[in-house]
Length: 284
Image (cartoon, rainbow, N blue to C red):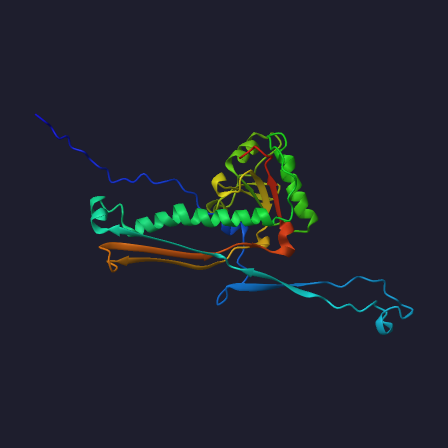
């Protein structure tokens, strides 16, 4: 006699792990993109310092004692948003019902944002920052013995470029963070304000707020990055998500999403990013 054993499906979905974006800490939205897909940013030159001519010997134009009269240059950098991305999928009514509502459109949309959209935007932004960094030393092999010295080089580079000393961030991937934890010279402050911890800051080193980002969102051979948010503009011009019930030709829910975004490193502020790459053949 055949016996059909009962199969029980739990109301549980094996969700993928995902990490919240840290992008907002490292970038800014200083420009207004409303009504525009492209913005132009002025770069204004400065005048030369001279020795003041008290005797009025007439070395300057028209006998100016202040020196030669110069004209200031006003050039522009142009930034055009290039990323216009979208997705769509349908959820049949019976599929939703027979999976105990685990295919509900709202849950599926939140999952799409968490596991697909946010990681894509992060990967693009971090790649732009690494490529546009004004300080890119030769690749090195990072170890627990040299990691602190290499981080100090990043801070020093920003100091010499006169980047604001506050609001600087150190971005590391998990394997590099392990090296930091093993380094006897690093004493990390972990008494972080709750609002900063919620945003993703895990500690402080020499005035740098430490952020840990999954290696999958970083360029290959990423070591670490020291950055000030003034350097990178990361606009999201449009973020539009819709759930249509019983759209034409579909018995169920039609989910659609569109996001228009980009990231730009400002040419006059690129020195506010220090990117250290790992040596060839190494990955963090």
